[in-house]
Length: 456
Image 1: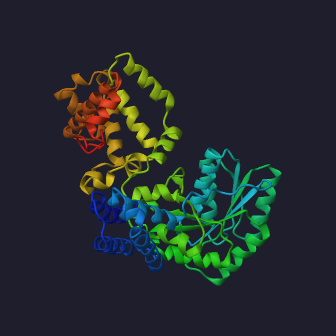
Image 2: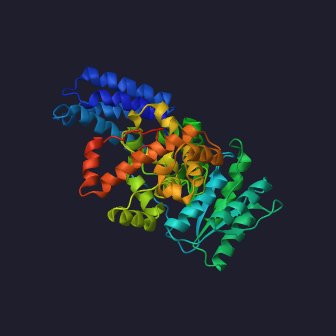
Image 3: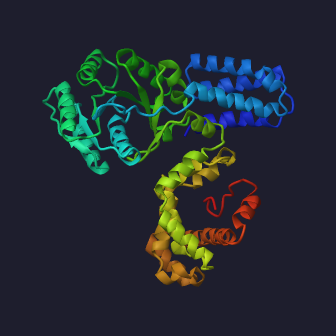
């Protein structure tokens, strides 16, 4: 996410961190590079101009110039101002209404609006413990109604059926009435999208808004369209009383221009960001955490929260007890760890949140992908129970059979065994008294890239 912006800003600010003295000349040079990085990231020009002016003003102030570590102080100024541009803190959904709380979704066609409805329904069910009904008022695309029906079933939300010959305003009103009858907490109304903004579209969505008076009107926008996303959001905001934005496809957005422009241009907060295609790939938008990722400092808080939600605590306790009793870490345990990574959104999502990842070469990061995790699991699944419990017996003929059974090469099996051995050594150190602290000191706070690129 925002890789190219992170790379540019990270290298620029890295030069500053160790400097014992800040002058007007090196502030000017740094800000020139920061300005170029933001413009290349497709951040809107007014946003760039205001951001650079604010950083310059603070950089030449006494707090930075008289600091014992002026380089670090200037990095903090950049961090604070980037966070301010995106809205300081997460603004949560307002559901403080007589049930059902009504959420109206708006956006252009292809922005991921219907998928975002399902993601939001799942988020409300799992995190807020709300019952949710979804309805589609997109009568122009019967496939959109069917798509929402399928997704509603997947996320276990109530689905209000609609037909392409119905009036969109009637669909929305009837869905809210039905949700009231069924004592549903939240109803989400999906609306028609267009390939571009047009008067008919705006008139229709205004009528729907007036008919159901939603407590939240969320605009769904594709982050990969850069500052165009912010301009589109402004056009909708001029027509509708938007309460927030859902920024989609951020996992494929290397630039970050939309995230840095929307709040400034519309005055509306980004409330969520879509970070993948699956229905669980929706995260509340925390500006401070996103800036931390952009500046290469990771997002440990989100990583910990995700681990607490998605990791199998029973399996973790079982492994800890096993190691404490002195029983070795085997390939079945290793497979469990790979599955846990998959549950947490995959290795790429985890690495994105780890500090220092911007310092790791792109070639090394590219080796780490979820396809590789699937291959490793397939290799372990091709082994017998005895082989998984005693990897030392896996020699020539066994390797050949395992490779054939998993559709891989013998060198893939060798690579897995090498990675497993590294993980086994780490687990052994962790099980010893004070082992975790010693291991972290040994790593020097950095993540080594083991064997075939996995971080062990």
